[in-house]
Image (tube, rainbow, N blue to C red):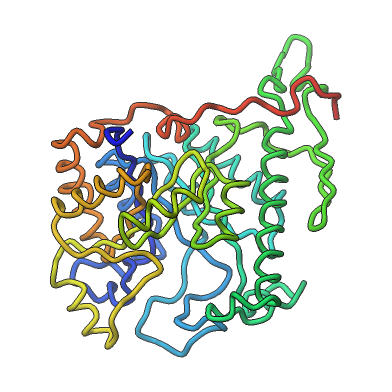
Length: 385
């Protein structure tokens, strides 16, 4: 269906995805740890009627090294908690989806389930979750529950390394399953709130989830009623076969990183989630990346393709990749707020002129924006907790 409307999201990270972006004149590095900074960015994205924003997060300090903190003092270091940023922004927005990153490795699914359910309530049904796996050895050291080897990208083909990666994603799949069951552990009408009879809750409509697996044993039920969406949107970033398999099993939407249209078609053939969003790092000032590279004394590269050009040229690229089966795009602004403003004030109007993007929000929930139904509760009709 090459003429279907595009979906657009933006990935918010610090002052932008280029490590020297904080040195741009329009950047606001002094405000990175304020609510106003993040609220302003999300309101800008909402002004363009983007489907959702994602917030980056991790269990370790940002680093240019794969095996631990680096010694750089010229890059942004430190961040706020993504779920809490989303919860703070939620009451100040009305239409845009809010998708924080929350790491599954080293954390507990019960905690994340109620945090994201709470976000869904606070936002009125606009919550999502970017599931993240931590394979970094130094991050394991923050928790002391296990040790992990240093996983080097060039050794992923080796059996021992591959097994570690498979185990991490198997654990992530169990984690998501626990979270999904906890979201369903209250039936939608479990709360009666009947003052006359003194009954606030129908206990028969709360359910034990009784999950007992290799990585988790969780009885349930949740302490938070079923979220407004039933199941908030679950997303995952995937680059290769093992994470593709995880996304197919556990996610509603997969972020992928094609190099070009033919690569996008190849990836689409391996991913089976309802939505497949391609990630792109974007610079709308042709000289911006070169200028920032000079400041950083190195050429910026990314796991995703890097685009530099005009809004019209990016619109051409997005429509070309759509024909390969990509259903949406998560754009990573190289500079904030400059490249975000170019998305909302130039790219979006360009896509609208081509009939490829909507004029306004057409649904009240994030699942609704993406054309996904509200899932039935798996425990309806089951015995009570």
